Image (cartoon, rainbow, N blue to C red; front, side, top):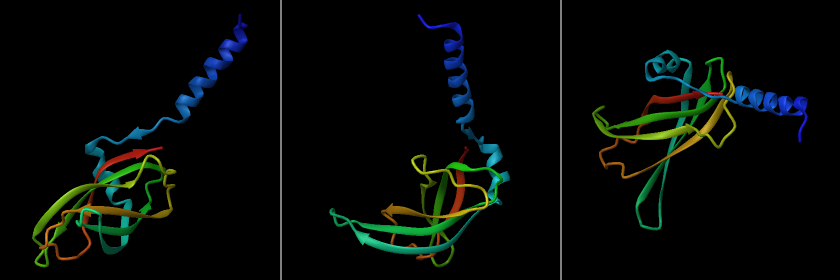
Length: 137
C-alpha cells in the first residue's frame, strides 16, 4: 500500500504536467486580432506529377510569429486567383502542425502546402492565406 505523501506527490505531478502542457485554441472571433501578428512571406511555387499522373502543386513560404506566444497549430484557408484577380479555388492547409515543435514568438519557419486539382485558370500567383485555426502552446 502506498503512503499518503507518495499518492499526493503523484497526483500533484500529474496536475502540474496537465496544467503546464495545456494548449489554448483561439475562438473564431479572436482570430482577426492575431492575423496582423502572423505574417507569410517568400512564396515559391513548384509542381510535380504523382503516380496517378495528377499534378501536385507545392507552395513553399515562411511564416513569422509575432503574437507573443508560441504557436502549436496554425491552419489557413488558401484562396487562389486568376491573373485578373478573380477567385478560382480555395482549400485548407496546415502551416504549423501538431507533430512539429511549436513556433516561438519572434521566430520564422519555412512550411510547405500541397494542392491537387488547382484549376488551369489559376494565375500562378501566391495564394491569399486566411487564418482559420490557431492554437497556442
